Length: 160
Image 1 (cartoon, one colour):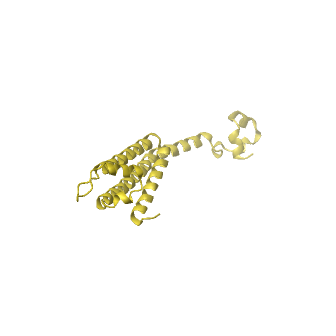
Image 2 (cartoon, one colour):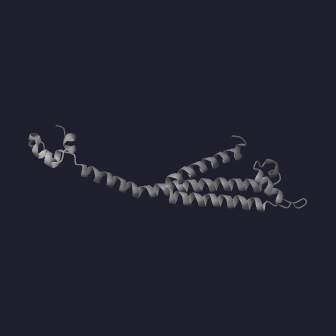
Image 3 (tube, helix red, strand yellow):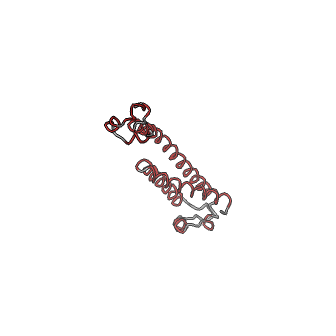
């Protein structure tokens, strides 16, 4: 009988069988040892996973904030052509709320404030999601960071 077969037998059943004397107890894989091994591996992963999780969260937050800063810098750099180039209808409506002085630069303070607050809210919710529900948080963070990278590519090159 193989060692795997002994694993399924209890101690009493092994004692009643005649071929037990040829097989030592140390040769038989122990289920308890496997449980301890699994437990130790999972405990190591539990110690390592928060570090990896926070590293991933940092990458998401840095990506989102960097693209947002780049977008705001382009907004400040090209204020006159922004009303024609802005594709977001809510953004166009917010820019129409701002007062444009005659011959001066357009006042985009409401628009920039909305962009900043939107970015801050997204980053806060993402942080909360990763801390509370890591699986969902990482999926959402990866999706938002990917969309931000696509936006950065579009802002830099003008097409996708």
